[in-house]
Length: 124
Image 1 (spheres, rainbow, N blue to C red):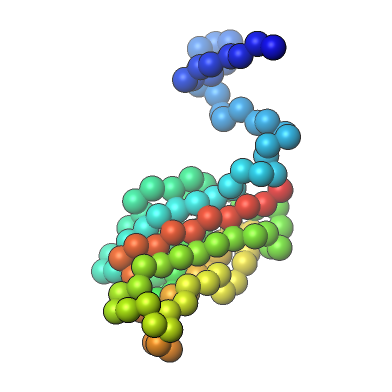
Image 2: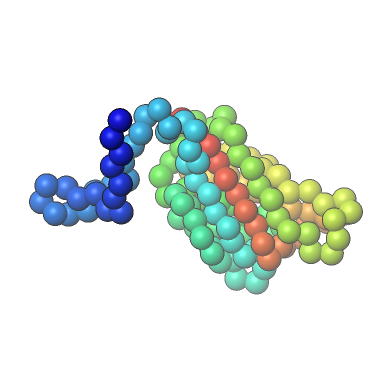
């Protein structure tokens, strides 16, 4: 068995290529993920296939995909850091779309903006 290791793949003309696709792994890899600040001016810290975050009001955000997912029945996970305390807090994906997901965070029945938000989506 051989192993190939490289940091960058180049096309024959020397230009960079898109990320290589490994069909056996594609369905097991995240299609989008993001870590963002949800207080004040919403800002993405780190992301993959997320073009922007739209602030939809206190504790509600749209995660917008750079490349659309293939369907709306994909597994996704959203977690936000509790602002006041962990009693009665919940973070969840409220709506799924091919170009976005709407997420919500609340504590003790009240929507809350959170400084640390993480989201990940899988799709085939």
